[in-house]
Length: 200
Image (cartoon, rainbow, N blue to C red):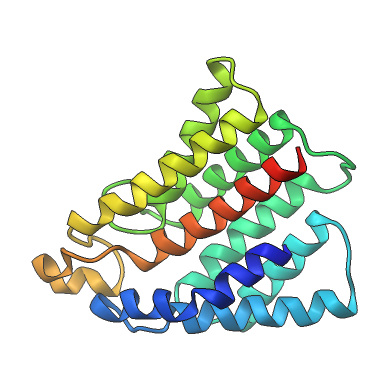
């Protein structure tokens, strides 16, 4: 949680800059607001990872506007619920948490890979994690596969035309810039992967 919060705080300007190219330009500002408020809440009421994720989810759902607040709120609420009451997170539990996110997102959003949204990083990352475990990788290998696939998914959005959200109104003019949601999603998945690998 600490590193995720720091990553968003350090990258708030970058996220707003790329969002500003085809959107409102407030993605980094809103994400930074939500994560900084979470930092303040966790300083007063610390807990385990599930508690941290649930705290973040509540703040994003209730206090952050735009499309990203509800989407990320749902992602972290689902993950926090999956990890609750577990003292240790292994590769299988983390897989279940990731798959729960994908299931929840499919209900909340119509976005699919290729629409130029955070899903372009999220779904390939989750799929790569699952595939890596199925092929016999350990926890570290699966996390690395997730991180790499998310990065590739993020980069692929640069040549896409937005099909969902405000930027979809730009048509062809939305091509040529990385999607801000995919960028923040990749950042957060990468921080999770790197930190868990260090702990392993």
